[in-house]
Every structure is written in C-alpha cells, then in structure tokens.
Amino acid sequence: MFIYTKKLLLLLALFATLFTSSVTQVQAATNDTVTVYSSRKEHLIQPLFEQFTKETGVEVNYLTGKGSDLIERLKLEGEKTPADMFMTVDAGDLWYAGTQNIFQSVSSDILNSNIPSHLRDPGGLWTGLSVRARTIVYSTDRVNPNELSTYAELANAKWSGRLCLRTSKKIYTKSLVASIIHNQGNENAKQIVTGWVSNLAAVPNAKDSHIMNAIIAGQCDVGIVNTYYFGRLIEENPEAPLKLYWANQNSTGVHVNVSGAGVTKYSSNVEGSIQLLEWLSSARAQSIYASLNKEYPANQNIASDEIVSSWGSFKQDKMNLSIAGKLQSEAVTLMQRQGYK
Ligand code: FE
Image (cartoon, protein in one colour):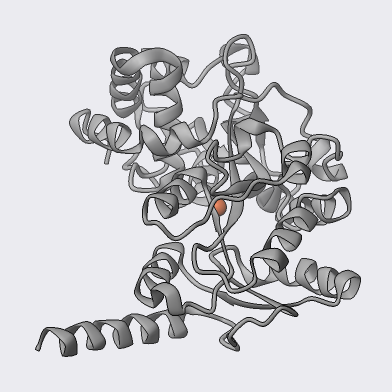
C-alpha cells in the first residue's frame, strides 16, 4: 500500500512538473550532454546554452518549472535523476536546495576567481551567476531623494501610509529581512519590520511590479523592489515618475541576491556540468547572462549593460549569501510575529 502511494505521489509530482514546464525533452545525460533543471525562465537561459554548445560541442538539455517543484522532483528521482545541474533564483532557495541534499560540492579555481566569495556557497554547493539588487524605489512627484537613506529608515513614522512592500511569503522578502537581522541584530530588525508594517499604505503586494504601479497610481510613495523589475517597467513606460534609490550607502550597502546554480548530487556528467558552470561564469557568458534580465554580472570584472549602468553605481552588501538561507526561518518567525503578511 505504502509503495503504491509513493509511486502515485511520484507520478503526480512528475505530471505536475511536466505541465508547468516548457521544455520536456529530458534525456539521460551522456558525456556529450548536460541536463539542467531550471526555475530561471527559458528565454533567459536558452541563448546561453546554445552558445555553450556552439563553443564546446556539449549539448544542454533543460527543463524549466517552479523551483520548489523541481527540488521535489530531484528528491523523488534521487540517484535516477537525469539532471546534472539545478539552476534557480535567490540564495534563500539555493540554500534550501542545499539542505535537501540535491547538490554536490564543487571546487573550481575558475569559479573562485570569476565569482566573489560572498556570492558563492562556502561549501561549494552552489554559485551565484547573476546579481539582483533589492533597493528603494520612489515617486519622483512626491518624494525628494534627500529624504531617503536606508531600509531601516522606511520604518520612520514620516512614511506612515506611504509605503508599499512585497508579501513576506516571497523568498526575496525573507532574504532581505535575513540580511537586516544579520547586519543589525534581531532586536533592531524587529523594530524595523514593526515600523514598516505600521507604515504600509496597503496590504503587501504579490509582485514587485504591483508595488511600482501602486506608486504610479498614487497609492503609496516608496517601496522596495528588485531592480530588473524597475528596468522592465521603465522599458515599457519610459515616462513613469519613478526612480531607484541606492539604500544603505553609508553603512552595509544595497541588499543583493543572486540567481545561481549547482551540480546535482547524482549527476552522471560532473565534468561537463562543471565545464558549463565555469563557462557561465566567464566574461563572454556573464555579459549575456546578466543583460538578458537586466541584472548585474556576478563576475565583477564585467560591466553591466548600458541601461542597467544608467541607474548609477552603488555599494553592495558583502554578506555571504548563505547567511540569507541560514537566517531564513528566523526572518519568517520575526515577520509573522510583527504582523507582516
Ligand atoms: Fe524575480
């Protein structure tokens, strides 16, 4: 009975992943192929994989889906998984995947020299491949940037009824609050989150784009978003009365996060996977990787694309991103207790 239930669950999970996936040609890997499970969207990875194949002759099979579904799938497939690499967004999710025992440790001088250590797992389980900055966005009609300074300052009563935030359920929020706990301690973090909650103009938003649309609509004046969402909005609406503000420049720097990847524990092509990972960290791949999503290259020797550079340079928080994972449950508890929905 138990075996049947388990099989049924496996089938259900596989069907669920297949239906949410856009590419399903996943074959068992050979030495000439690397198979990637990715929660990063197809249009952001396909051009890179094509280029990699052109340069190396190594084919890349891939399957895209929701990160949490792919992690479950990897766990269910266990040793039989065709996946050699798992790619996802946010260090909190990469860290979680690491705790689920689906990665193997990789030691690579190329990765060590291309990607700064704060953007890599200290145990070598995953590495960041692009950087996203989560910072303050404000209404150019109703906010003078001189009034802005830090994430913490958005807890000040002067922002009462003027703040829009993303839901605390989103991993981006969990990682940001984890970084505040790390940098300022639990007690200060509690006060900051309490202040944010009492300043909210509306219930927390489901998406960063909703935050910016609410500011444009006059529902609130300031918010916190990932910069690539700002990039997308400005591309569609160049006249939008919004600007980015680089938070915490006189202290810890802007909270950054990564999209990244690691080699799976049961990869049948470890060599090819490391080759792909190293290639993705190279100068050539990094400029494509970051600019496809208006992010920042994780390889700090590479310049951002023109539009992204036009938002100005900033100091980034150098907290090792594995800490965002380690403090994730503390961040969740803190937000729940302070009524951050
Ligand atoms: Fe996103």
